[in-house]
Image (cartoon, rainbow, N blue to C red; front, side, top):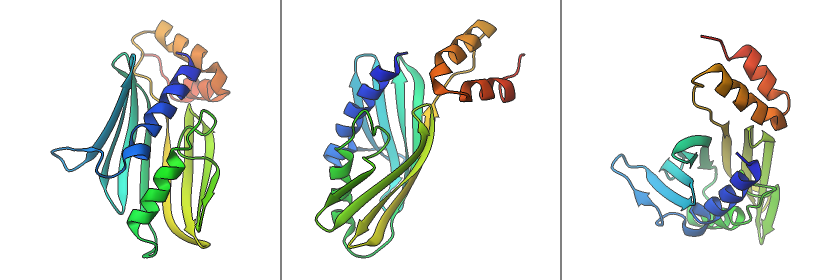
Length: 186
């Protein structure tokens, strides 16, 4: 799979779901979770979360009906002022700034009036974790942690396993580490 195609899809999916519609734009499911979806071509994206403050959720991407990428997140508002509505409104503005450089959440930093957004990510699309924070007049008012990466179904045979790791060579040494430490021959 071409990573560039996934990056382009993720940017469009994120901008066209929570970043654009926010609370109220999602489908409320039987279990109480809220869901936003986006589809284009053979890709499907789903963002499903529980709660309002705090909240927890996951984003999943399928290609041709198979899960290929996922991210989990947990966030909360840490102050009574400004209101949750104002904080989440600012957050949606930030998340609409998604680009192929800053795919996972928002940009490294974003400022508007008295709000400041800071995002720190370690890793790459293959395997990552990060935090985002919002400050209002220099006081922290919101925080979120996230992590995720590519998903691989159990290989059916040695050839499939080898193909997966050959594709991951762009992912630096991680592929070799996982192959030596976690993959066992059956």
